[in-house]
Length: 226
Image (cartoon, rainbow, N blue to C red; front, side, top):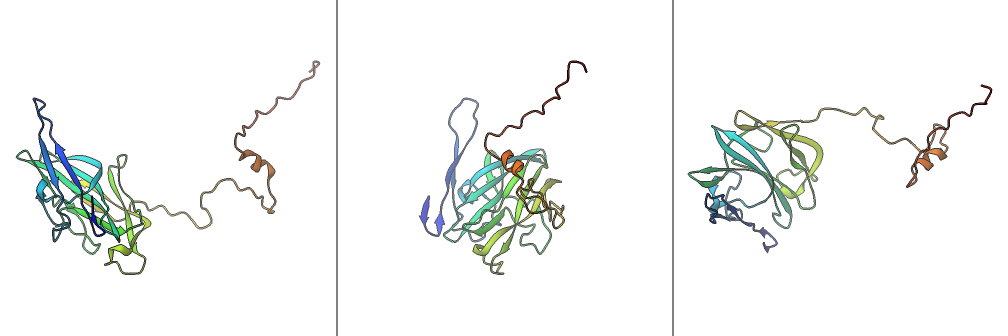
């Protein structure tokens, strides 16, 4: 729900599975626009830091299930946010946020945060996804377009990737996920249309036409006396 150009509020509920099929709901009350330090806050469903969740990652800590939620929040007129959130249940009730990050100093995040909030320029779209094959949260690195990193509405993705690996009941920060560097001049590309002399290779043009199907090579015709 858009309250005004600077406030977008989420609404939702957690529906619990019950033995007799009766309805049991926990309403989610979005307090993100009034909480002084949303990144550090641990609260129940009445102090929820609202987001639309697009991925749920189930892990275990101390033998109990804990869920990591990846979420999206429209934010305000200048910036948008993506969130790494924790959800667990204590005494049957939901609790959002947990200090289960392991992050080195000096990268803009800290070990005391209860959730990671990735805020960036409104029309930017940096990635925050879970790679099931690698078992990693993949997060695109942000840089400021105007060399003002404290102004979140100037941050955009730069194509480099950081990440988090679940280790010893914590999301442990990884500075650089992909280290492969393509040598200059050896970028992958399709077969060129021009030959070394700069002439158009008509056969390549024909191969790229819609519906083209290469014909099988013809077998040489043998004479009867061969």
